[in-house]
Image 1: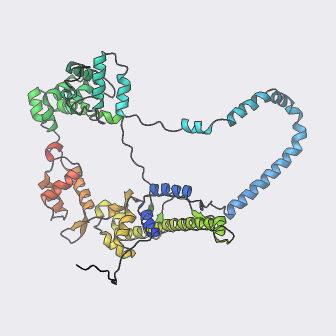
Image 2: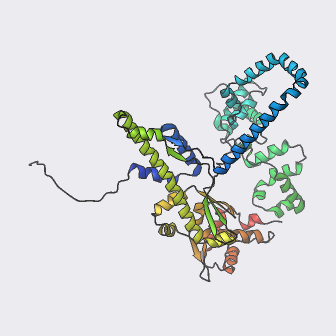
Image 3: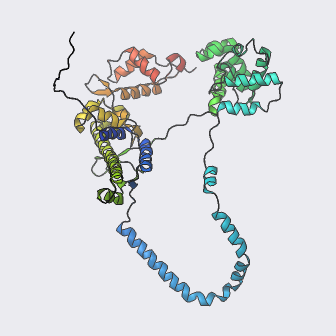
Length: 486
C-alpha cells in the first residue's frame, strides 16, 4: 500500500458566533434580578466600567441655589441677634462646658462603632432546618441513654414534612448493642411530643391523631372518626360514616370543619420554602384619552453604565505602555459589549411586548376568557427576529397590567376553535372550566362528561372527555365524588 499526502479545496458555510453575540443572547435571556447580579459582577471585574451618576436638572439646580440663598440670609440674621441673646444663654453654655468631657467621650464611642459588627447584627439569621430544630429539643428530653441514641437515629429519618420516612423496624440493626427495638418505640413516642405538633408521624392518620390528642379543645369525636373511618373519610363516604357512627351528617361536617384547622405537613412550619421575588420588566397600561395601550420598561433600578473617560483617553495615548494599552482596550471592548447588550435587551423586550399586546388586545380589554392562541413564530415574524430570540426574550420575564402581574410566556399557547369559528387558547378554556366548577351545585357536582357538555354549550364542542379530565387534574380539581357536599 502506498501512502501519500494530497491537498484538497472545498467551499462550505459554517455558523460561528462571536463572543459579543453569545453575551448578547445570555443578557437577553436573563430575568431582571439575574441581570442586576450580572451587572454587579461586571462592575467589580471590569475597571473601565462605571455607573453614570444622574445629573441634576435645571429646576433642581435652581432650587439648590434658592436654598443656599435662604441659608445665607438666615446666617446674617443670626449674627445680628447674637449679641442680644448671648446673656440669655450664659446658663446653658455653663452647663455645656461642664458636660463637655462626657459628650465628647460618647461621640467618640459612637464614631468608633465597628461597621462590620453592625452589619452582622442587622443580617438575617440563617434558617434552622427541621432536623436541627428537633435535635435541639431532643437534647433537653430526660430519658435513658439508649433511648436518647435511638431518638437521634429516628430524627435523622424525619423528612421536611415532619413524617418518619422509614419503618421503625428498619432502623434496628442486630449488630448494634447501644439500643433495642423497645428503645426505638419509646423514643418515637417522646419525639411525637415535640414541636411542631404532629411531627414524627408515620402516616396522615397518625399525624392527625397526635395533633388532636395535644389540642386544648375536646376532640374525642374527631379522634374516633379518624381512628375508625379514615379510609371512608378520604373517599368522601360521609353517609356511610354517619350510619356506622350512629350520628347525623351535620355532626360529621362539623367534625371535618374542626379538623380543617390541623396541619397535614407540620414540618413545613419550620422548613418553609422561600418564594423567589418577582420583578416586573414591562408595564402595560391604557391611555384613557386615546384608548391605546402604552408599553414602557419598568423602573427596575438598573444602573446607567458608561466607559470611564480617563481610561478611554489613556487607551488611545501612544505614550501608554503597550501592555497597559491592550489591557484597557480589551476591557473597554468588553464594557461596550455589555452596554450594547443591555440596550438591545430592552429594545427587543419592548418590541415583543408591543406585538403581544397587539394580538392579545381582547385579553387586555376583557380578561383571561378572551386570551387567544398565539404561536411565537407569529411574534417573531412581526418583530423581524428569529424564533429563538423571542423564546429567550420572554423567558423569566413578567409584565404588569390591569389584570395583575403575569409571566410573558403565558400569552403564548395553543388552542382550539369553537362552533362559531373563534379561537380559544388552552388558558382561556381552563378559565372557563374553573368557572363551570365554581358555579356547579355542590350537592350534585358535575362529572367530566357533564363538564364537557357545559363547555359545548359555551361553543367549545370538540373537546374529548380525557382532555377535560387532564385539565381538571392539572388544575388540582378533585373528581365529582370528592367535591360532593352532604
